[in-house]
Image (tube, rainbow over all chains, first blue to last red; front, top):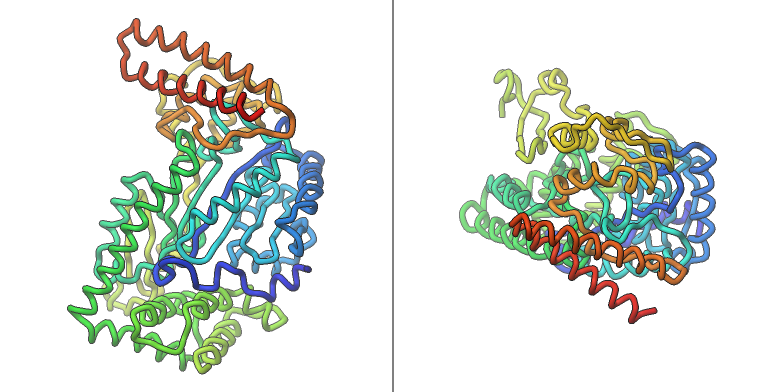
Length: 349
Length: 172
């Protein structure tokens, strides 16, 4: 399969299915791994980084996990293609700008991707729709075990997997969940809940990870500590805490329904009205209105739209995806017009 | 809704950000948002935090500046960048990193998945045995010094490693 095909198919994590998918958009686990005795990407030079890239690609191309998938050095991708991978969360922003002879491998279903020469030699990532951290761990564990048969990983028994940044050492694992929490935001309870989550040792971030702002009531919650707990402990801690957050969100939605249904319906109806009729719309406005629409759908006020198609709209209305579907580079205003067209079309169906 | 800053113009930029674990919500007009630089703020850097941590930590404030034999990175350079250079840095800076890891992770002992690699791991089992011996020495010292909290921690680490050794010999 070529990258072209990947870019034209929807990733599995956008399907909008899986447990608690009315609140949990996606689950993700990533593992950081490095090769023994080779400088980390930031300390390496062109030759050493390039050797890592070649060596890792050779191994990945043999693995069943990447059958029909894509492996490519970043230098062979256009700026637009890289931007699309970023908008789909298949690669990170750091990976785009670091310039350490990076590469990327993506599985056919887009649920598994590996960044080569990001901050670490390998960043293995599994992304699934809904609340499914256990499934993510199962898959990524088997990928990692297959890789360690072929690659010498940097590892010490007392501190675990060695990483470029000591905040990742040990398991090298970051498990995260993308949550849609409009109920807690509207009821002004979000700060309280997030404070509690942070106290329990988790980190909260926006839609595009580290340093990104909160858009569309979407929050990413992940483990902070990577050393001293096993992978399964990390996952079960997150599961326990996130189950509570999901429950609080359900309660807030219920409370809004009981206390102020008219206001709630008005908000959802207005969002729907603008999305279905606007002719010029920015990406920020889109995300916040889609959030209201998604809530309306999850609460049964809006029918005839699937969660998956709203998830998909979050992605296809991002700048690079718009330009890809248009087949040309567009300026901001043309993008806003095209974005509005796509949304109107989708909501008509 | 009026802008939170000038209280005159209609707020069109609705902005939420998490700063120092506090969620800040602001509704701003276009002008004030621009003036405040909303949307173009540089992301918080983990290395800023790390260099902060190593500076606070007294035990790291030594005059020595060890150099990693693997990649030539100096510990002082790591303190600036927050990034290590290669896997050997973990051995070269083991003492300095110990206290840093404790601060970041509240722990210094890996409990997760163990790397097996393609070869038999007779080498690792030797190093695990060495490590157990070191820990036991330290444990005795801790007990002698009546540092019972530390002793309990060490005892758990010894137990974990002994279990690990047993598992490994079963599997090979």
